[in-house]
Image (cartoon, rainbow, N blue to C red; front, top):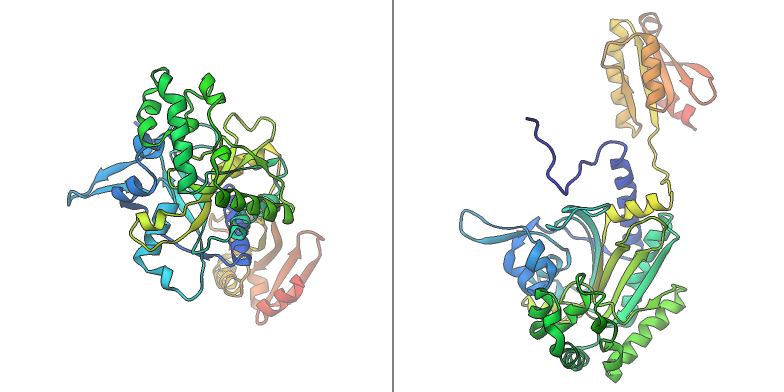
Length: 423
């Protein structure tokens, strides 16, 4: 019996991995332009981090985490999301004391959630995320949103929609919580067991329920926007103003609550409007999480961030028929005729590689015609042909595969003359 890949995971093969590398390089470059620095956190953390950071009423904690005990009896969890680990590291390493504030971070990280696999959604997936800690300026909310919107646009996505909401501050959420409890309590028995459990702990989570989304009480539930106090309302208006200043179109959706307990004030999602993308259209989600740093043992510190799935991004690119300009061309392929020439091309290939060129040669002992076919498959810019006779004359023939032009150059100055052919 052959061993197959676990359900909900995938192999990223050559030909696909170059697409991932291109996306990652774009995200890294954009993060640099916005002055975000990379952080890398462990693949697994203490389970308590996610219980406290994500919230024990969330689907992630209740149903989706991969949790295990190590040999010391410690409860550990494979990372299901990126914000809590970054905030844990921020607190543990006292980054709140750094001279440059706010602390602006980005990450690429593998995440693990036990959920039903479907198109573009896996149990192991890769997330690109950004976190900005230490500023309560609504302008940084707009900056974080603009970063991810620009990433999608620079990669070629056009059919995307930004949806935003305000979840308010503590006072606003308390007033909204009371209204939701009064609204749902009389008929809570008509809802699923998860919603019944959330009524007392966090009634806002009911609005995010997938099972009962069509229930009539969902449509008439009190909107958080009706309970924003003056400060929260002014904050949200400022965020919207900055987005308008940046010419970023958005839609306000008062039912948007996100799936994690730590959000407050600004919450947002970016969705694909591409035809045939699928029922689950969300590409990216994020928001402000003032209070999370304190919950994890740090000083009072505001924060905002987002996370996006690379797999979902690639699915959206496919839905819009976007082809990324991935560079796969080989600079030089060596064709050798004779044993001495074959041996010599080992050194020539290394010389080019050390100067930054991509180079390859035959390792299958193939005939000359088959070697040229291999060069074609590898999309070689140049093919360098060396035989034993040419080796004695210290010459090598280099063919430009685009023009067909052939040039004989000296082996003694091969790298320098090859560089001139590239110009």
